[in-house]
Amino acid sequence: MRTAAFKSYKNGFYNFWFENGEELAFEEVHPRVLKQYDLKNDESLIDKDFRITFVEDGDEDNPIYRVESLKPL
Image (cartoon, rainbow, N blue to C red):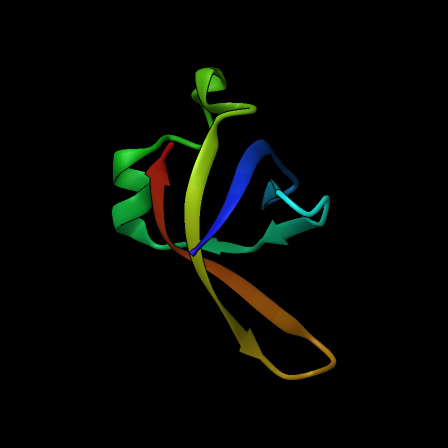
């Protein structure tokens, strides 16, 4: 788990900024996470810090990142 702030949902990507300054765009979010947090529409979640767990799928040249869990801080 890492700490990240949710920044936006744009063009089909969920954008998070991590504590080290790294920004990562996630193409997928586990359905149970979206059931808990309406990341597409709830503006109160912008800049909110979470403990995030994610996986990297795909291949080396074309990775796909998926959020597996979010826990608010």
